[in-house]
Image (tube, rainbow over all chains, first blue to last red; front, side):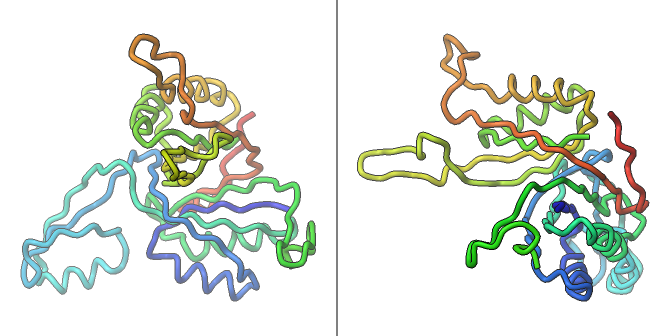
Length: 143
Length: 116
């Protein structure tokens, strides 16, 4: 039995949840966390010009960039800001040994965008599990 | 590779983070939690407060750095009276260490090599 602790971007939670549901993992714990990695919490901000002028929003270097450009009529300035701890979501799944690689691959597949800050996955051993309602222990508590 | 879960006072969290950065550990996750220890919270008159706010820091480090990180967290999280700041006070926190078998970087989909 293993626990899979993954740190992902907040906007990827929905997609990750549906992808995990599709492979049969319906029980997931999500936590609101903040964190930083080797980049020491650098994010990119875009100062909007045009209809939304004056607003400054945190954005991630995704495809949404395109819509942002359209929204601002092509005028927006970019800068890198060091905010220290970046908001993230931590998801915790306890799975049977044989399911670990499927879960890890699903999380990687749904979250990999090739940018810094995509997240990390840790796999740690678990000694036992217990379902409180029925008192079932071990692998039976997970099924 | 091991995982450190450190529960510290919210007011000393910044000190702990700065101290860890000083020795070159900059990657960590921070979680706001509440809890109490064997003192069962704080009793004030008839009221008992059991949900005491704390900050939990999660770090994954190679085995070589674990002892160093624990010493740094321990020293930075300790609070005490002005005349003896190294004494430590109830509620300074706890450090837990667990095993990590594998670590993956999502960006590259690579398994981080386990450093013994």
